[in-house]
Length: 62
Image 1: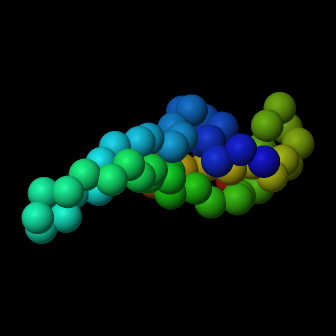
Image 2 (image 1 turned 135 degrees about the horizontal axis):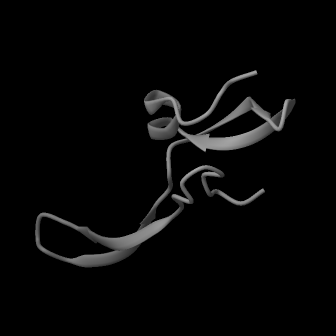
Image 3 (image 1 turned 60 degrees about the vertical axis):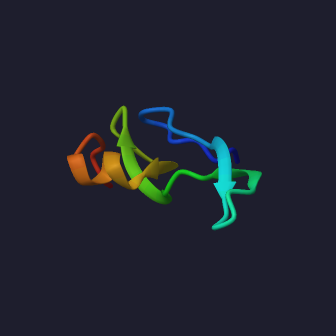
C-alpha cells in the first residue's frame, strides 16, 4: 500500500533537513494518513485518507 491519500493524492514530499550549523541533508516528509472505512458506491471500503480530507469532510465514513 502506497503512502498516498486516496482522495486528494497527497504523498511524500522531499526537502532539506537544515541543522543549526546550516548543514543540508536530504529528507522526506510523509503525509499524515489514516486507514479508515469509507462508503464508496454504497459499499464500505478500507482506504488511506489524509487527516486534512477527514477533517474537511471530503469522505463519508462507513
